[in-house]
Length: 319
Image (tube, rainbow, N blue to C red; front, top):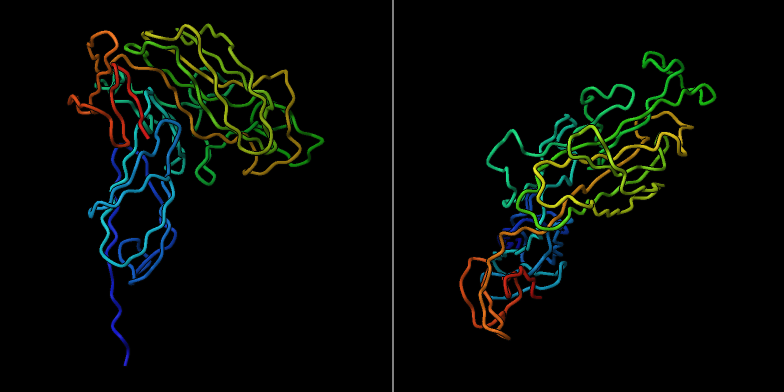
């Protein structure tokens, strides 16, 4: 005779972006039903423009750390709350298909041209040897984008050889996008994560343009093995009709190309463009007075709970 097994339901919802992982699967390999007493770790997942604020269970229990433990001794219904920083657009995963002209994975509700689908930012890959039009899509490896140096003996993209002594160093690929900054009152900060694994240029130039033809270099990013985060401020980019940005290889710089496999090249991830929007609620106040609104625009006496507030006209995350 077997004792009956009690099964409880786990429901998790996200508010304000972000996502989560659960430490182990439950019944039928899903993450929805678990035997009584099962101990689980919930890990929140954020990116460059989202931050975990708090989690709340329907019974009132609250969680404030980005990773927390739960025990399945009853049905649990948890809401995870995330706050978004001011940003324009971004891309944080590339396992969704390697097509070119990839529309932004994240597009701010404050984006000036969001209503016009023809102006939604798209990430393009170009080839410096043939710069006239976007090239074929990049590869996808474990949730990261991958581009490489084309290698051949003739320079015409027709003949390839695995003998490293015969490699012809071609000019390589680069990433480019464009977006409006109308309604953003600060210069754009460009964020990207990159690493190299053979077949890549170690120096990547961050360049911007107002017309897509005349480019200004504002930073040189040195890339090596191991994913690294980079941050560059693009000067004079606030409140512009259109800003073009590209990550362009330094063709005169060092390169690494002693192997020839499709997993080698320049990896990239977490591309975001961040700027402060003018759309925060402006709170008139008397001298010395602190005026607080919640994110829905309701006037409050104080910010007594963790969350996102408008304090004296500025979006503020209270922990």
